[in-house]
Length: 271
Ligand code: ACO
Image (cartoon, rainbow, N blue to C red):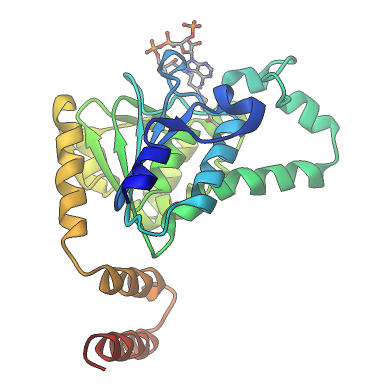
């Protein structure tokens, strides 16, 4: 445990020459991993390097980690995709939408799949992910918050799915969790108007689990982490698996799945 702490505390996720552009920091402390978007001077704008850094963290996350906290340094959680992607020059070493449009469509779809990998692993049953969100969470920033299991937010939070206003669709895995959290009508309203959702509404419609004063965000996250770590690890993993599968199963199927998971638990505990 101490070794993992020493190795990873304060280190940047290795993303080759693009590390500085990625701007992602990983800290592992025993069962807790903290991922920090660390380009506050650019409001933690995200690039392809950010997403590949996130994917690499997911691939190499130490097995002992049970809770992953995702946060942003500075006044904003994340102002979304780096707007240089919309310029002819693009992001150095990573191209632009203009250059992507000239390439084979299949190539770009593949790049999007790679980017999505940085978000998808945050739903693994083996971990619980918490987004600690203050200030702006726009576009890719909103979707990163949506890719986590839980969202604890500061009272200055402002979520905005800006993609449709820019002629794009939200493609970083955010549409499904948004619909599941707030329902189809509200998701259509939020996305197709690109309006801002503030803290009170986020709490009311189920986007946030808790709203706290900005200065209390870290403490609120620490409290939630402690609560999550207080339950049995294997039971937590099995229970998350059950909960994640519940919507796609009938009641009868879900009951069968509960029995299978419980039989395994009883065997592990008393066998
Ligand atoms: N990409 C690149 N740089 C950005 C981005 C971004 N998305 N957002 C902010 N920055 C930069 C600014 O250019 C500025 O840089 P500079 O100091 O070199 O001029 C710096 O971050 C600070 O930005 P300000 O606008 O001065 O900060 P402020 O706190 O006043 O406003 C806000 C923050 C509201 C987030 C504003 O920066 C903004 O609207 N950003 C763009 C949001 C956006 O449209 N994102 C794309 C969403 S769509 C998607 O993600 C797919």
